[in-house]
Length: 253
Length: 305
Image 1 (tube, chains in turn brown, green):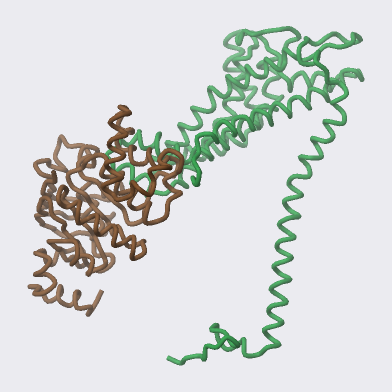
Image 2 (cartoon, helix red, strand yellow; image 1 turned 180 degrees about the vertical axis):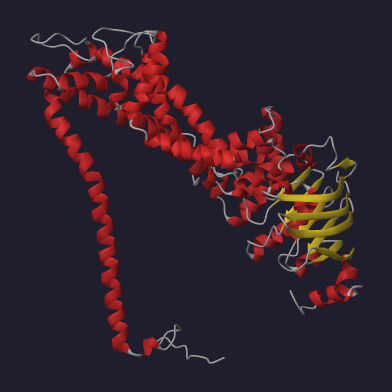
């Protein structure tokens, strides 16, 4: 089951450039939360702070507090590896491991952490591919074909299956459908709809219709600040901030 | 906005195409340039392969006459005697190259990983510079270093000292090439693995290095092929031997040394043996490289880049 994510006083920098300013957000468990805003407003940086990928960038640093359920993500005794095991991520561009088979791609999270039980791995791979709605398309070539041999939309669902296989509590999605055609996009959206029963989903998107379709909550970012965070319905029909309204009605961004 | 009429006759690119003679001229020039560029590329490709084929053809022509089973199974014989072979030199070369690879491959790949994954700042820059300088050091100088470090310390020549000299020569080539191919692995692949909660060293070994494995293997084979024919560093390390020796701590025969000995001798019979030895050396190097490629390719899937 998913857990909520609490963010308090989060600021982030790339070298001397500040990318996020004092963000506070309560992301509810087992719901989808959309992050919207114009390019370069810090959406991706924000979710990369949740699974501690931000710190892998050279000269990047941050301040503040992120809690995954009861786990203090930047606590003294917490390792980045521990956080990332509980917070899965799907990236903008599909990034399967090119030298691994489809099966190994899905099993990689477990295998690379030393898990070797064949029977359980088989089960996990099948279940994850079913959840990602990819099983029927790849079940005959699981161990024969490379993950890179699939189409773009299939690759992205493979990446979702790979993230699901380690059974995270929170799933971050960084514009997961922006590189895909409309049919693949609707497949991914259906998937998000099913996944949010069991996972907490945070999805960054440029597509406001997509945010309205899949997310119960929406946060609007502008120039590194969280302008407004509320129920999606409220954001899209009756925003409290003028800037949110301007963005949503297409006056800028 | 001014709008250009878009019809099949004029095209959408602008107004130039309105002039049919100019269009024909541009077409003619473009086709010629294209032909020329293609021809040039083919010519250069042929020029790359030509010397290799010439060398190989010449070796076959001069050497194949002296090849027989005894050449591969017998020891060298004194001048004047018929027959004899270089069996001990083939085995000795394999032993020396094995020792060199044991030293050069892990060391070189390890340093390459360090440079690619952690290589920011002053020390890595220094390391890169050192590797490039080491790459340019004449092989005989490296032989002298191995002589001073190993042979003088131990008090005798050995396959070990030869292997160390050649291993040192492998390191910079492998290091720099490994760094290059690791940097070609997209950041998104590393991030995917980090995002799964895989420890960093594990990502480096099982994902990044694996993704770049084809390039790393090429680098290792290049380094191997380069040192396999080296003679100078072995002159005063492995030293050579007319008899069987399987002890890495003893003077050992090596194919290049044997070829050298035969080639500088005044005897026609030995000259013929030198040609045959050179042919065998080339075939063994090509064979080893090809074998590694075939074995390495078995782990790659359909559609993998």
